[in-house]
Length: 327
Image 1 (cartoon, rainbow, N blue to C red):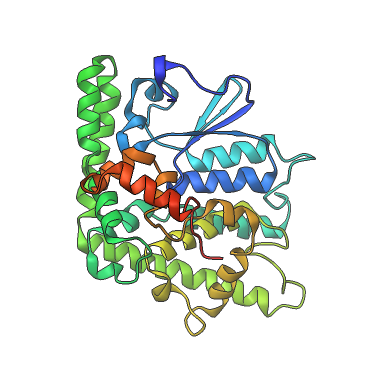
Image 2: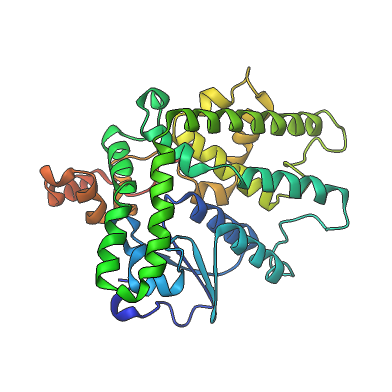
């Protein structure tokens, strides 16, 4: 277990990513590491059991959030900062640079689009839609998992209060976090706000569609990605955003051959990229829960009625041990 005795794992690894596979922001950093070709170790943080609120993790990241990158003795939190750190420190050969030169015209488009995509309030869209069944008619998540995801999200207050009692020395950190969690819980439960955020996302995707259309209709930019001929961190941000929309069943609303067709073609193209195939989660099945937390998450999602051993045995017999992703 990562937090046993407060020890940090992987003492011989230069880069360690503390992450959760279904975490939107963890996926972005993992994809960046793979695209850049940087060797790294992974440390699974079981947010379903509140591991991110344990004392050892609070020392690592007082924000109590994944992902966190440890590079030797240096610790970097927040996905955008981590990706910027990787770009600043790991862009010379043999690693890939994932941004246009700052002196180029492409850089301004890249910076504008990446910042716009990174500003999307994914937490509201994810958990706000989970609270509104009408928005999830075509979701790729089984009903019991939808309920479990929502339930665990709203148990954050319980996790924080428990740790605050155990570790009063971190009361200031936990109080600050609890205040943000309370605000978040109220916002994702606000139907009008969630719908407003979805409409704002529509507007952003309209702008992205226009950029993709202009690229496609220009002879010298026909094979470009979002901002340039090379794949960039803006593409990572867009790719993971689209995969989350697909997971939530929002893809038909946002893109199709008749609605934002260039975005639809982009999503089809990104599905062929190896890093995306390894990181993005566009479907969740019962078997995937093994990858997302084992018995902890099975219990969390109510499968104790069937018996964890029964479920694990059935999954093993069926051979379903890999994430199912749309290829």
